[in-house]
Length: 254
Image (cartoon, rainbow, N blue to C red; front, top):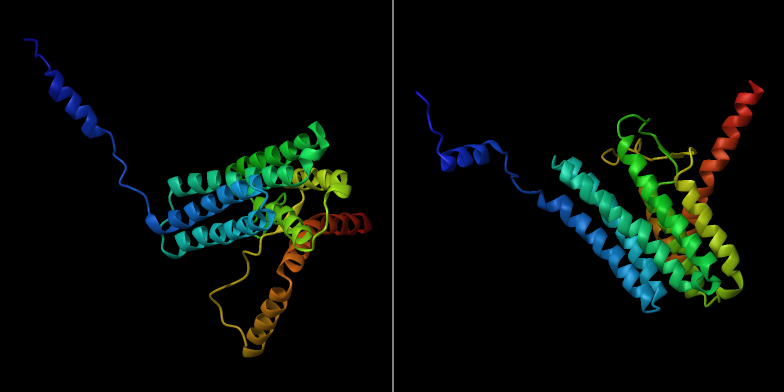
């Protein structure tokens, strides 16, 4: 005897067998949304000629980007959705935003060479993020391979913020800035190792004297944030190649 299958019952069974999403975690993704909004705001500010606001927005995106991962780990709310959302947010905030802001700031005066330099940075940021996602868990957590995209964005945003605040006309330095942007982009896809800082224990205790030193350093940075933040991230960008050269000389000497 042949049994007939009710189409409605069959469809209901197949639908029940599909796992429905249970939703997403609010808190970490809220910080990721803040980073995405800051990157978008940087692009809009750059288009309107407000380059100080654009540069500051990129730094704000860095703060949100640093918080979302830590909050997710502290609250045990990591998810694949959060990881993918964070990667897309990073592409906007640290890939597209610095490229477009630097282009509207000065690179557009170079014509096709200006947008090529901006595109090199943007494309390298995308490649950097794609490579990072495929290498999660396979590298030493103490190091990043290639310059991290937030640090690259801060190195560009810091220069824009500094020159805008100090009233320095970027036009005479357009070619140097184009080379600067392109090299920072290429450093993201290099094999140079950068310290990740993940070995620092933020939950640990420090002495009272060290706490006073931290307060003094923060107060010192606040006196001229555009200059000192740019120099800090520029030094971090240069630290990778310097350490690579030192390690190469050490191996040759051995």
